[in-house]
Amino acid sequence: MYNMNLKIKHTSENDVRELTRAPSVYFIGKLFTGVLHVNVVEFIREKKERFQQNNAEFRAKIEPQFKNLTQLITQTISNTLNNPWISRFNPFEEEQEEQPPQPLVLVPAAAEMYKKLEQQLGEETFVGEWFTVDQDCINQFAEVTGDQQWIHTDPERAAKESPFKTTIAHGFLTLSLLPKLTDTVDDSNNPYPEAKMAVNYGLNQVRFPYPVKAGSRVRARTKLVELSPMRKSIELVNEISIEVENSKRLACVAETVLRLYF
Image (cartoon, rainbow, N blue to C red):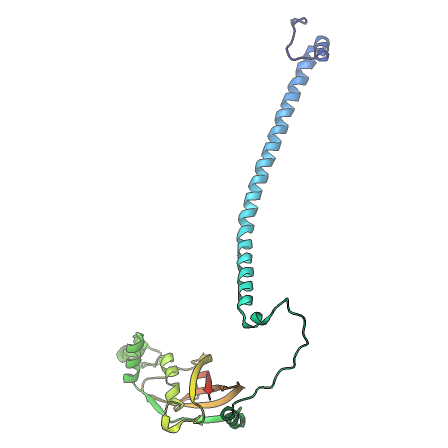
C-alpha cells in the first residue's frame, strides 16, 4: 500500500491530485514521458551526427573539384593577362573608332624573294642526291645520342631476331639528315642568297612510315606548302619526303618551318 499523504518534492498540486486519484496511471504516464523524452533526444543526436558525417563526405568529394576549378580559373586569368594584346588594352581610355588594318610593307629584299617563292607555292622545289646510311653512320649516331639498342647496333643479333633481318637506322638519325639531304647547308649552293640569315624554326609534324635498313640509300624531295610574309622576314613551310631506294614506302615525312631574315 502506498502512503497517499507522502509529500513529493518538485511535484505540483495537480500532480499530487492525479497521484491520489490514480497512482498507477500517474507513474506509468511519467515513465512514458521520460522514455519519450530520451528517444527524442537520441533521435536528434543521431540525426545531427549523420548530418555532420554526410557533410564531411560531401566536402571531401567537392573540395578537390573546387580546387581544380580554382587553379584552372587562376591559370586562365594569368595566361590572359600575359598575352601581348592585353597590354594594349586600357579600360579607362575613351572608346576610339576602330582603325583599318595597315598593309604589311616588306623590306625590298624580302618583297623580291616573296614574289619569287610565291610562284613556287604548292610545287616540288628540290630533289636531292642519294645518300648511303651505312652501319658506321648508325653507330656514330648511337654513340652521340646514347641509343645503343641492339636493333641499331648489333648486326648479328638483328639478323637472327629482327623482323627486318638487319640493323635499322634510328628515326631521329633520318630526321637529322634533312639539312644534308635537302642541300641547305652548302654555302656554295645557297637556295636563298638574298637572305642574310636562314633559321630553322621547328617542325609542324613528323612521321617515320618505314625503317631505313643499314646500307640503304635515301634522298629527299621538298615541296613548298605554305608561305607567310613578315616585315623583315619570310616564313616557309616545306613538306619533305625521304625516299628509300627500291622501296615504295617513305622513310620519313616532315613539315619543316624555315624563316628567312633580310
